[in-house]
Image (tube, rainbow, N blue to C red; front, side, top):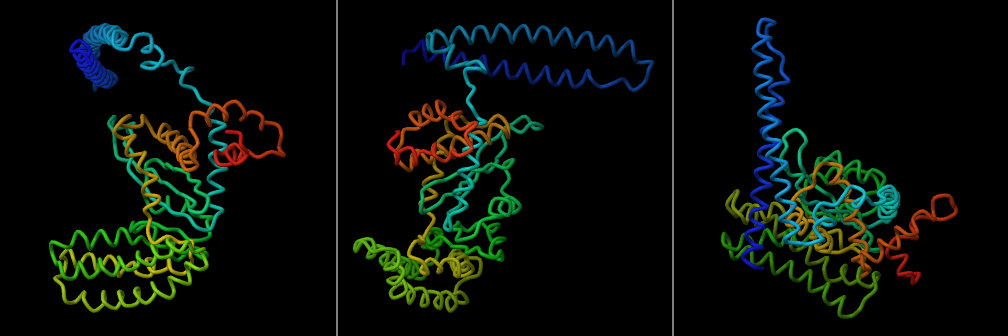
Amino acid sequence: MSNTSTENEALIKDFMYKCDCLYRENNRLREKVSAQPLEVAEKEAYEVRLSEKDTIIAKKEAKISKLEERVSYLERQLYGRKAEKFIKPNAEDRWLDFEGFDMLYFRLWELVLQTDYIQSDETTIPVIHDEKHKAVKGYIWLVRSVMTGRQFFYYDHGSRAGKVVLKLFSKFRGAIQTDGYERYGLLDAKKGIILLGCWAHARRKFFEAKKNDLQHAEYALAQIQLLYDVERKADDEHLDYAQRAELRSRLAYPILVRFEKWLVSEYPKVLKDSPIAKAIKYTYSRFDKLSRYHLDGRYRPDNNEIENKVRPVACGRKNYLFCGNHDAAEDAAVLYSFFGCCKSVEVDFRTWLIYFLEHVHDYDNDYSTDLVELLPDNLKNSNKL
């Protein structure tokens, strides 16, 4: 990029920053002038101050207008005609049929939760807080059906509380695989739900404890590696789910029993609150969930698959920086859901989106059809994409 373009970009950022400062100053002035005087006798002085502040606000708004004109001019210098369409699009240009998206999104939600083996994870997403007028940390959830590959993101006012867990999985029956977040423990007592743990998280604790106690940490890591060796053997032999479960019962289960006894016997021997003690405590407190994967050949030993699926949100944080409000974050969750579904079946999102927008209203009046037909995997299987 030329020096002129770089200077123009710096000017745009500077002007936009100054505009933002002026907007904030005007908002503070408006808040002050909206307050009523304490006594009637102060009315005349109050009206004088009000007039003065109105004059100041008008001058600053004129400055803002000039700055915005200069920003617009510089953007067109940098981007040409594309600036009008892509830098500051009109509301009509940005509009998408979110009603249709929402309908398909809720059907996707139903289909994922109707399966009997899912994985769940959550990550942060910055959202502008209406009252604080600054970006605050919110949480967006990802739920994925391991067997079908379908997934959906979910946003509930940025909350990560236990009530979201109970709401999200209230009707689910089956196995849920998660990381070590304690709020998932609320589901452990629910009838029909099996909680599975993640050996990758447990392994990470012992790896971090190597500097503290190399001997104990390396033994634990070796035992965990033996469990993954069993998985590698099953993969190499191309075993089906029943054969994998039988192999785990024969080879992995004895390792699990021996490792659990080691955790119990070694915990009193290490320093309390040391990294190795925390690793042992973390693993033992979740050992029932960690060991359940051997019961079914479909279950994974860890949550790595869904952690890879949640990475696009981290990429988004570095690009668009934040969501403008809670509604925008909910819309982002809907779009992320379909991004993920397209990626899992190697379908181009733009191609799918065009097809969806062209055909979604075909389902408005025909109640014998189901919007599920428009999901990326179904369209690919029917050779429509």
